[in-house]
View (cartoon, rainbow, N blue to C red):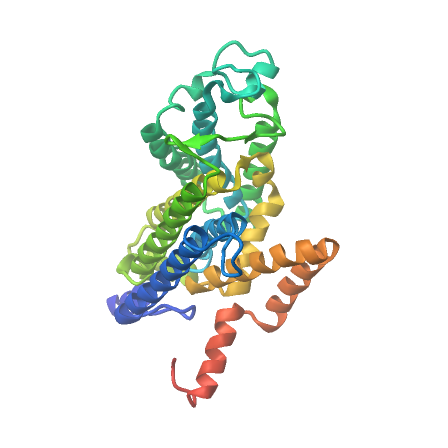
Length: 382
């Protein structure tokens, strides 16, 4: 094989929406403006408009918007490894939950003596007759250490797991099954009371974060703003990566891993890097999710939770980066509406939506929109 063909294998644009330099910059700016404007408008309507006004945005909607933004970060993280690397993970709920648990431990320590038992220990530990904090709670009273552990704990777990999995050349459905098994095992572990993670109930009843009341409107708006900034930052980094040489090599690995190895590239290091980055993004989303929703428990590690992340990516359009954001907002927006209007039919609607996308919209909502735009533009690329 010639050097020219090797260069083509690693640097040619793939079929799944690889933008050029100008386009990825334009897309990142557009997504950034949409998210930031939505955040600013929602915050202003919550804080500046009287509650009795029809234009007032309640704390409930602020929380819902922040929660869906956290889900969008998870979908974006999965698209980095599934859409651009060809690695389908059905265990990303684990990394999301780990980030949430690290933040939840800090929030539980912030309760102090305001709990039901008036003890410095969390209420569930007092109920279980614990006398002192377990060793893994040692740094939970430090916000700086919490921020560090949100990155290190899921990142280290992902790196170790990914190293052995990718070195063993585990691929396809086998990798998906192993990631789901890992998540399920972690869920069973966190359900146990003796592990010190709250058992079935997890962590809840938070009072404050860095000294501010966690239920105050100002705090909720601040958390929403941080989540919006995190989403924009993750999107910009992801866009930059997939448009760089690193991203082109990832896409070549997805399409022809053996050929990439023949050209002298090491797939292990590339896959391990994007896998670890994806896990950290999910953990950051989980850490932002917990103070806004007010609870974290082992159900966030359930297999269904991880599968649902894949559904968001598929519905929006994998391999596009913007598609997972659209999918996360569309699916979760519909879920919030239908679970109130007709909760018994929501799962059937979700299943039907996934089947419809698989059969008739393999490129998702974004792919459908692009095809319509091309027709309107007379075949020209939008």
